[in-house]
Image 1 (tube, one colour):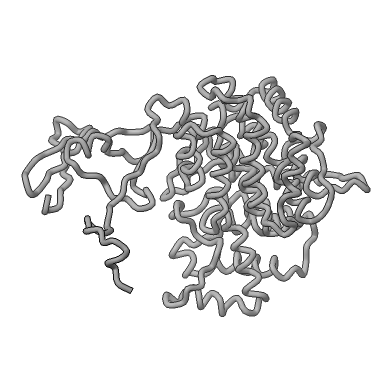
Image 2 (cartoon, helix red, strand yellow; image 1 turned 30 degrees about the horizontal axis):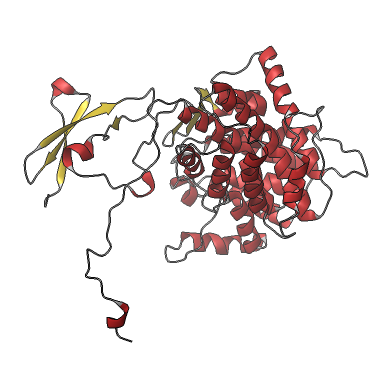
Length: 445
């Protein structure tokens, strides 16, 4: 087909379809249009190749829907993020992470009885097999905690090989419980290993976020007291990062899971995807940028560079690929950030001083306001985690702890979807056409 095809609206009698017209032949192909509960309608192109011999071309899949989902809805233009219909602002303000985890996994917020039962299950699964400790010793001391987290999570499937039949709903549920409960333990152990401190076991008397803080910062020589302000901040960070629709790491988990892979291997694949600086590493990149700026006096210099189209420098933590208005999570994180800084009484910390000055400028200067370059969730979460004492190498690890419940909920939904098939994107081949083979003896040289 030498000429481009044209997409034209279908006749009014069939408003739930569009017609694809091949301009070279005049052939028409009618494709159905589907509507979701919210958001834009989608053109169902599953029969496109069979009827036209053509595929669509969509690098990054930014205009392609790969699945049906009932879990998370995002409207980037309006700054809306909903989990199972609930606004993220309400969930972060009124729920703890366990409630949100239950919502994502089961579709409903739990009542008091069900919450207690679910929290008990997650708490009682938080220990890891003692032999797993030997896996940590195989890593170099200076290994990045994300490398450790990825490797250890993948190794979990070897310790829970009893789970094989994931067509069984109960087996899927057990796998979900194990991953949600053990991820904080594995993450905290990765931190302890990198610092040379002894591992701290989870405590059944602590809640999810409290346990994560205790396992990360406690030492055997003294009793560790959980600061409630910091615990609530950690809880909010977990909630705000729990799921975000079909992003790179979630799509990776679904793609890996579509082959029937063990869910713990699928989550390890998601962790590897999350590690990228354009995805989960964004809050770590914020702190790196603040370090590059160095002191408040240099901020105008770097803002000038950010405005220069010919300068590759970018202000990290401002604006968002999805949210074209504002990041709804950032509003909650901003308030939490100032609560944490106030609680800790942090003053004269250069990086945090720079961050607060950048925030002030971004919220007042026309350049940022006109372009809607507001501080996003990564900007504030990086500041909070830095203030709480986490090294920057742990930022993405904590993101993975939070996102595990979203990943496993998405995996579970995919497995239960009768339409799901093994993922197999197509390509536009631009390489060599068939060539005559030349034996080595005749290639010269």
